[in-house]
Image (cartoon, rainbow, N blue to C red; front, side, top):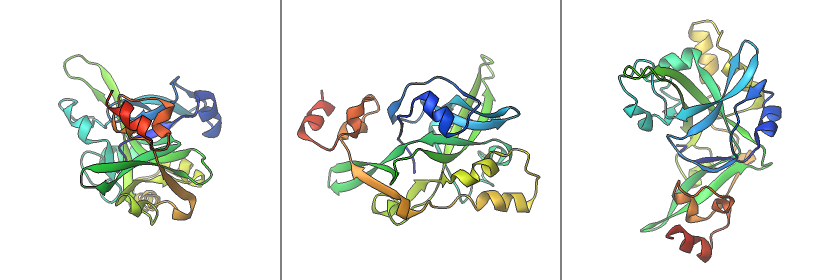
Length: 236
């Protein structure tokens, strides 16, 4: 599962790292939560661009936007066939940039400790995603939305959770973003082969403040080590 993540990289650095033609302006984020707008990278005729999209995919055929909150993640094992995602899997794939994500682990009967998971070299990551365009039948508002694809956890992540986001290597970005792949079993298999757990040897995690438990908290100290001060602030 991927339900919270961070993107502290300024837009200019994100543009350089992912070789983007342009990226919509955004503020660095420390506690990104579902149903918020997030950066999604897709391929266009002029190159890669980063756009802000609603986190929670709304299929183009949906009658309303209510299902978006349930569509923040798509399971890699079924994403090619599930009606909610299969159209986007064929033609509307994206990268969702982050520099880490959160997971929670039970450490007591009523207590979960949040952890921040990153690469060992602290470099940004590209999570595999899908996007869709939906038009509100009443207002005619056009909403672009996206979802994060998940897979089984590697040996590091299994200490926290059974699922993890699909993290794509730089070498696979172009294949994943290529919307001109021919239809057919070989293309599907090539894409599905990318939806695997990332190398455990290149990942790490550390405990952080429970401030991150609330999406209302959006400050750098969400990433502080657990402390009594942070616990007190959580309930202010």
